Image 1 (cartoon, rainbow, N blue to C red):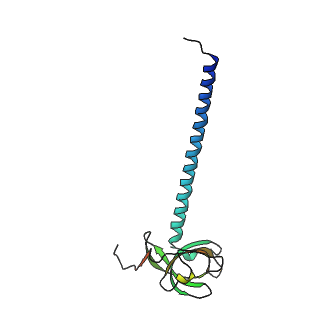
Image 2 (cartoon, rainbow, N blue to C red):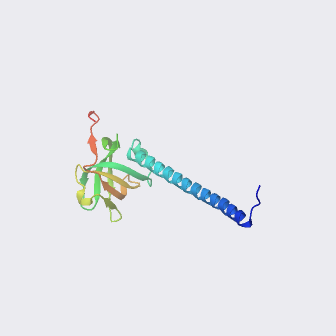
Image 3 (cartoon, rainbow, N blue to C red):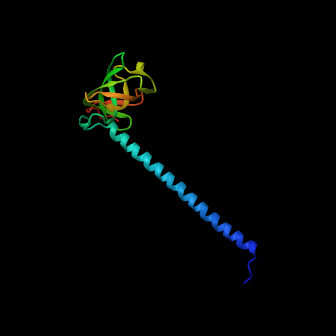
Length: 158
C-alpha cells in the first residue's frame, strides 16, 4: 500500500465535504418542492370544495366564500343578484336553490371582464366575505361566461 501525500489527503477531504454539501442542498430542494406540491393540492381541494356549495346556507357570517353564480340582475351601483351553482365537473354546473346578493365595490378586482360584463345569464366565480345579512362583499369576481355551462338536473347529456 502506497503512502498518501499531503495533497491527496486534502483533495479527499474536500471531495467528501462537497459531497455532503450537495447532498444537503439536493435534500432541501426536494423538500421545498414537496411542500409546494402539498400546498397547491390543499388549495385546490379547498377551492373545489368551496365551489360546490352543498350546505352553503350553513356558512357563518364573516367566513370566506368562493361560489360560482348565474347572474340574474345587476344594479349600476355594483349590487349583483344571482343563483349559486353546484359544480358537477370543472366546466358543468347545476343550479342550486340558494340565491345571493353580491356587493361589488371599488375593492373588487375583476378577471376576464368587468362589471359591464355581468348581466342576466352571465356566469361568474365570486370570492369574498359573507356578511351578517347573508350578502357577500366581493374581493374578486372572475367572469366565466363562455367557459362553463349550466345544466338542469334532468339534462343528462355530457
